[in-house]
Length: 229
Image 1 (cartoon, rainbow, N blue to C red):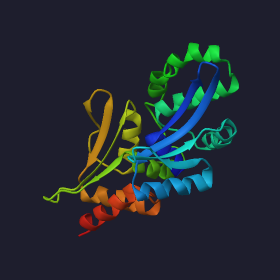
Image 2: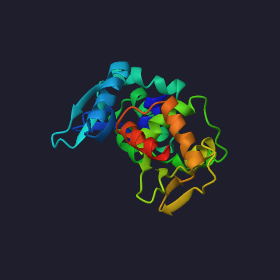
Image 3: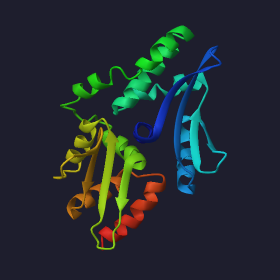
């Protein structure tokens, strides 16, 4: 499911409080304010719900859902197509807990514990098996986190990375049958960078068959022309 992959990469599942009086819930995706991203988020809003707006500084375009009732409806999608990143799994669990128990006192006590189980989740996915919806999810995740790089020396590449979740980048590597090592360039960030034309062609084919919808689609078109020359 494309939207789930996009949420995993660029989305946020939030629970906040209003003046320490009541809880507020929010689903949000924030992207660079480009026409292609705006059009993509409009398509998502038409299918899933939510609204799209441009930030006051004109730098970003945002898809957002603030209504508790609408959020409760939308997150049912996650019952069929669960998030894959450890961070979003934790955010979703915290949101569901706060929807179930709306006590402000419990929220205050537990909000700092939101990611307490993240390491357990990561360890449980050492032998991660990709779900049936992975190829559609992956296009959404590439839209968020993928990078198509063109170079004058024709050493073109595709790269993708994620904090904490080595299991996920390894799964993407295996899905595209890449021989490259999953690198850990700094901190808890894991990345994959691919140069081999045979693998790049697989990635192009994937992103054509399970289309990208925003700015990365524009990048892919330019990238494909150069790689296919």
